Amino acid sequence: MFAKERQDVIYEMILKNNAVTVANLVEKFAVSIETVRRDLLDMEKQGFLTRVHGGAVAKNEMKQFSTLPQRNRENSPEKRELSLKACEFINEGDIIAVDSGSTAIFFAEALKEKFTKLTVITHSLDVFNILNSYKDFSVILCGGHFIKEENTFYGSLTVNMYSTLYAQKAFIFTSAVSLEHGICDFRQEFYDVQKVMLGCADEIFVLADSSKFEKKALLKLSEMKNDFIYITDASLPKELKELYKENNIKIYTGGE
Image (cartoon, rainbow, N blue to C red; front, side, top):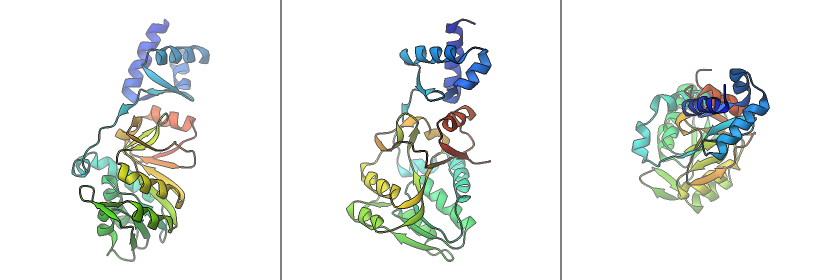
């Protein structure tokens, strides 16, 4: 098979799965690692993909911002699935910090299903309302300025309150996740709140449905870090999951 033919097949794989690994390409084409790397380098120069350690990913698309009501209607089964998966990392009686957004609503409902006693720190009024009067939950609402369309608090008062608190685990809901661009979001108002959440917990969990992977958004919250735990749904392509593991990214999917 000529290089152009291999590269056409690689491009089809990238379009389908958002990622390829060097190991899989070596096996598929029965060629050397050096040959595969040359193919990926040529394709990167042509703008077809972005090389990363262990393989390549699709050129990142800019994730489009949508309102909270719109997001509440999108990917509902996937958000519930990843929320239930995230609950496997929580113990009864834990102190956790919970971000805002549409996934936060599904996550809060999952917490009610799985636990009877938790301390939950949040700036989301939706999360507060779902959990505040439930069984032995203790909910701390970090107030401040309020964005009606997001049903969420933000600003220096919210940040200052978070900075005085400690959580064993923080659950961040992000708009885009990318090996090249890191963890990204849209709203400047929430940027400082999410940043302080990253510093107030022993363990950081990044939750995003599979449609948000290998996308980028306006604001970069953090590099992808090996000590973060990433949780998504089972629709994440196998090739992309393998590539994340090649880069020492701990990623878990629903259905495992």
